[in-house]
Image (cartoon, rainbow, N blue to C red):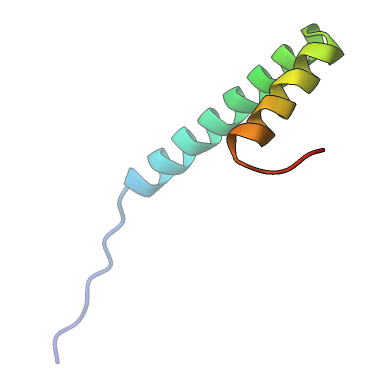
Length: 58
């Protein structure tokens, strides 16, 4: 039997940090857009997306 060596890599930590940063920026961007847009515009965009996905909404 040979002893196994445990190797550590910083790559998973970098990948996790990049994912966390992307998610935070995406969330803040969505909040920024939603807070400064008019309600009718947001409703129309959501309504159009439902039609684009062939999801009945009426």
